[in-house]
Image 1 (cartoon, rainbow, N blue to C red):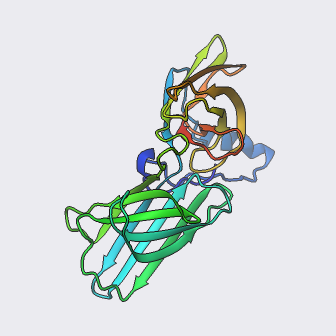
Image 2 (cartoon, helix red, strand yellow; image 1 turned 30 degrees about the vertical axis):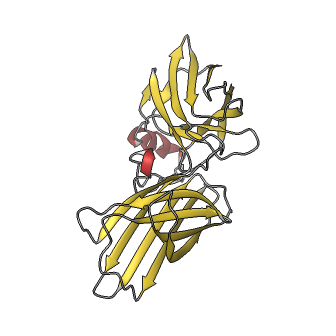
Image 3 (cartoon, helix red, strand yellow; image 1 turned 60 degrees about the vertical axis):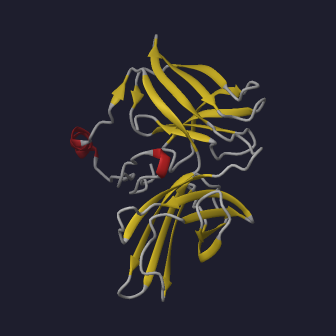
Length: 272
């Protein structure tokens, strides 16, 4: 599993930090010893609830050093298409309002795990404070704004964080997508129940149980029953997967996406 982002990704909640795969070269005689010291992954028979949140999502850390007149903006986003390019800007206006560009920022280019992590340093910064409100960070695909996060600095700090969430224009697809998944073991099989609202009425979405987490890998473990949204944008599905006796509380996630692409519209980490 790819190391999770060592930050909180806005609406995703706290992510695990510093987790990564390790390949151990051990002899046959040392295998038992290595196995005995390995930390087992917690498991459950359920029910395990999973929040499915609108994706992509991200976090920005903004720092202002008035002594050297330097502004630093770091942006981390998970869930964008690998290899795509997304310009970013610091705007002198709240999300949803037009405003002047204060600073163009380093473009986001997600890696193979759909994670973009960029940092921009602005020298000769004339602002002496980060305002209490009125600044926003915006991420684009071409000229279209796709994500926005408002900077709130009521305490007058020199370093602040801001969540960055999906921006959906009026009439855009899946405007308020969110939901839940419930995993449980029933008669030696894994039962997965999905309940998602806020989808485009009448739309179809694929769903899958995948290896890794929303912020990293995308390998499909088991496809799940497709979701068909009704006239109110609500959809449910139930899938039973035989031969699974326990639910690991780390290393699985559930993604729901349009059938034509991999990026999830909603995503949730099992156990987290």
